[in-house]
Length: 251
Image (cartoon, rainbow, N blue to C red; front, side, top):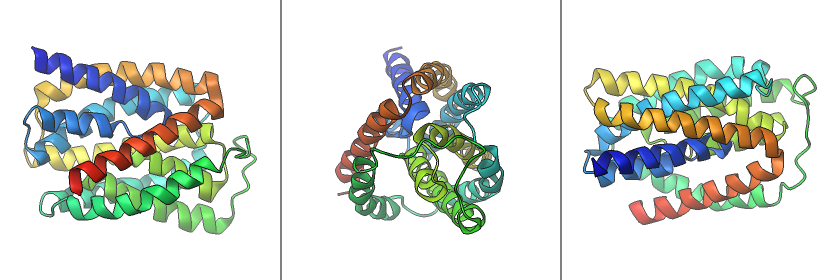
């Protein structure tokens, strides 16, 4: 029973963080490993609970018209394809190699977030993206980050948000909302691969999913209410947690 209480609490906290700035996997994946699930089963179980939480956060952002569907429509197929590739690789290749690469990228990403205090608040429908950004950089970012999500996962939402702000020049709020579309399809793609290969422990997954949904709903309301400043702070916290976690685990 204590194991379920622990995992449900982790699911709620992860859902809240994930809905705002991404990085919920930094909490749930270590929690699943901490209760002695094998790494691959922990990855598959984590995808299940994250998939449901992300879907509710996306629904909330959609109702508030915060998702930039023009960008989402371009990137979704690539995020899905990347996650399938990443999940298949995860079944054969250790995750430590990719994690070390991510560790190297965290400091410059953190500096970028720190100095982007005046990110322009551009409304959906008035984007300043170029054709290169929309048709080349967005698919490339979704494919790359989607592959990482299928392969390992923690921090995927954070990287998607940063990529959208940098390449599409949209506000953090619209980026956070739009990133949920990519995160959801990448979760679904990876989950299917892990499920087919018997790498999901459903009792833990289903228990965590309900609390992850609750955390995502509350977190997305906070993001919509408090806007850019709240998201920036959560994003910095998420990046810091990601950096500390990967350093501890893989170095």
